[in-house]
Length: 202
Image (cartoon, rainbow, N blue to C red; front, side, top):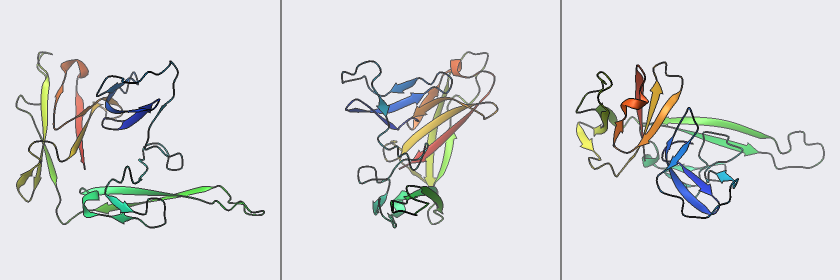
């Protein structure tokens, strides 16, 4: 799970605002609107057991720029599906359960990556106050600015999805996640040093 992802509680779907790496607490962008008993299952609508954790299953409801072939041996990928670099994974299950088939119900996977070199987008992270917390006295404002061929893109922050991750100084664990073109990193979330990363998708 990560910021910007979806989860379903009961019959209602919600958007994730942040996930705490240390406490595993998930914060949603809105309050719960449905009544669910304690212990009700929480699921991700894009999760698929054959693909495994960390992969979003492509469907007509979640195409991610793929226009056809979500459940076939060939997909159609549009130019908009690849923002600089994108990786796709295919899971194939042998459904032949006839006698003697030793691979029946087994799953094999392969991945392929694409790089868009025709119109690459660069991302600059900027801050009006700077990226330094002085004497634990200030928060840090951060903004992702996109450029293509020297021209700024998405100045209003509505055309792309911005997912931020604050890592510990060693880069081994995520302390907090954020969403939006502009964010504020609280001084309380940084101990010593932190590494801020922004992922832009469409």
